[in-house]
Image (cartoon, rainbow, N blue to C red; front, side, top):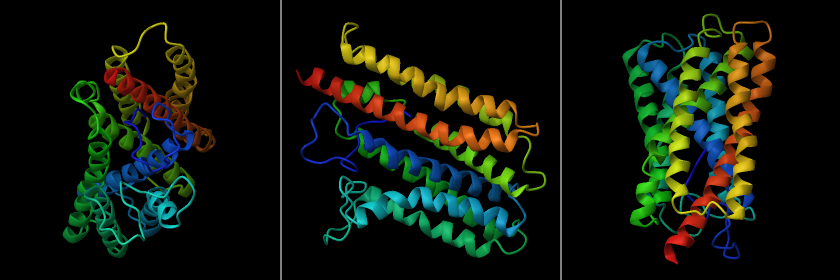
Length: 293
């Protein structure tokens, strides 16, 4: 998905100022999917629409924990290129940034939901924990977006005004795809159908938002720019992976090929989102250079 330049999560001092490292988009996209899973699960608990089996809740919660936890784990282990997470370097004695604290706090309601999913999910405390999980997940996404836009000038702030809404929509779309796959794998009764229409609507909305983000950025580029022509060609591949592939799988949601289609399309969608995020990050860095000049 489109994104502002990464804030050193996967960069180092040797990185050129107008080029985002290829791996910089990977962990944020995975984390965004994880927060989307948690937010949708929390919302389903609040509305009384969650799976009634314990495994039906624990499996997607664990998947979200893996997707969200990869980035702080990489920073904590000081892996090359991933020494900082949300502006914070774990283990160096510094207090976490505000964004890191919000992200860490999101784990508390997630663990509360894990402990409460034993019986009737309609119990008011379980619903409250779900609501808190959904809110904290959305705040974590918005906090990361705020950090990414904080270093932009007024012109680029206006050009990226749709970025927070785009991030929330992308989290809901990719999180919903993972939940659909989880329901198919577990063959959960009453939870393997009815995904196609809501996710197709989210895909349409996300596509419109991302088109608006790219269009707002084009005023800072020239049509003869070689990098722009290369990015346009690469965006075609990203669009095929991020939109066409999952939408085609969703059209097979009520057939016997749903599980196979979802298992192929969802990892492809994540790869497409990573590619598109990387392309947008480089375009935004080029725009920052142009504005500064």
